[in-house]
Image (cartoon, rainbow, N blue to C red; front, side, top):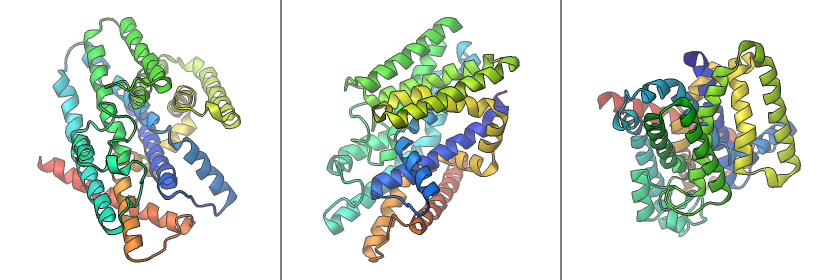
Length: 358
């Protein structure tokens, strides 16, 4: 069952990573987006509006996959915490550290030449300090002593530190809470804590808004995995209709009432129903499971982690060579997409070689 759903989940991760990196971040960093054709502009505008909430998809899918892969082994005490979490850290941390260092250096080069931080200038003095570089290299850039990307040199990497806290909490709850009922109660408790922190962050270690984003979405993925497992074939049609109604209805409400377009609302209603449908509806499984999307999903981590450094490099070259790039041009955006994916491919291949040698 797990393997059967792996491709569409991977593809959804890839599409979400691209929406964040190449639409939401592009719009945030360059303060514009292409508007060549009405449909293209409408789609990109829609994705840009919800891009700020899309990291939650990764938390949810990670929780879902971990449940399917590890729940039984963890409940039976077969894995120690180190054996569970260290392999994942070894896979992600080298790229996270390299991308943070390159981003920091490019920001410093731009500042030395132009006297300003050339991209993402708000709060850049703190974000590009030695303290920020240190915590970013350690993977403590968000949720420990700061919120959002305040101390994340490589802004998109904020989720990594929250991600591993969720891993550790999941291990402890699953390993030491006995009985499926009480485990689910504890998972739902983490979801409730997550919503609370998204609405009322406490500003304390592990109790920031970004912490809440991870807690709710990650453990919602675990509960969602169980709902998918327990949906009988004869009840799947009704459940998919219900999920479609929730998805469409929540989007309509969010579009007509902008105050609803919040992290907790989008996570609780939009993403949960979308992921459920992606796992249950055959046509969606085929679409999200298409080979190009699966490839993007397999390199979603490089897409995230090298996005900021790539954009900095492009803007630095733009200024040094007086190219006067028009970032609102669809041609420039397309060029940016091709260059970014080329960087992703190179960095992913390099990362694979690094892990093969070690």
